[in-house]
Length: 69
Image (tube, rainbow, N blue to C red):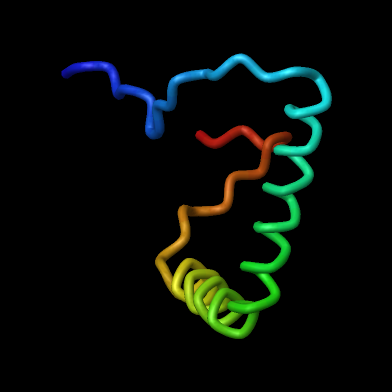
């Protein structure tokens, strides 16, 4: 089995401190705009994932202070 590679590789350009801060602010703004635009769909998707996980069979409950044998 091989080790997984990075999921996203980008060359790291040289940025000034100010440019790095401005880019970070832009990315936060982009993410916020994306979440606002797709909130209903994202909420629906994660609610469906959560309900699917709840309906999956669970492992037996083990009490940590009780001898299992």
